[in-house]
Length: 173
Image 1 (cartoon, rainbow, N blue to C red):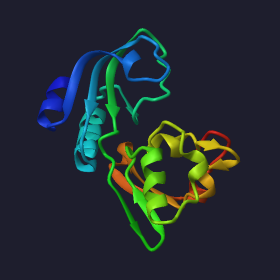
Image 2 (cartoon, rainbow, N blue to C red):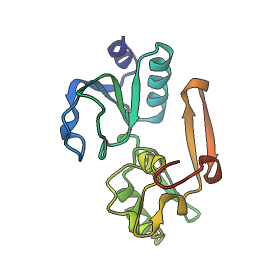
Image 3 (cartoon, rainbow, N blue to C red):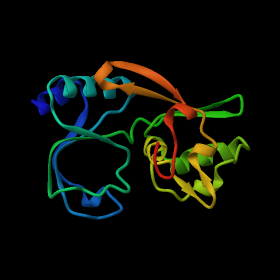
Image 4 (tube, one colour):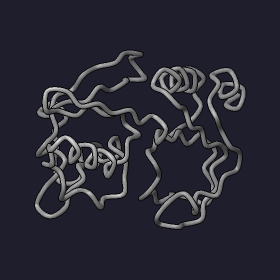
């Protein structure tokens, strides 16, 4: 059923993927399906359908620091790395979940808004960095973060959470 959903939502996917080559951890584990939506609307459509049919899934960024729990994952890994648009306005950057943190920092530097330089070498995506409150050299993402637009699958709605609402802590939000 999951493969049928992927075809119907026009999402690129692969079968039986060894994630060792996708993760910086290099741990061998096979995912039954790895889906890579290329925009927010396809991501939302995919998550709605997977949820409605009770198909297990995990949303991941670029998989840089993924440690598999077992040798085989029978669900769908949904990679967001292709959902990576970013824009700068009024001295602020807005970026989608799949944007790499290093690319965001380069864009900030181009606009002389370099408040996040300490985080440059963190290999993850923005979504994963928010989830884990990425930090380095005395700076955490929560120090420069304002808000996140989040799709709540179980409620089928998008909500904007502010920094206080996300309850950032050490390597968590």
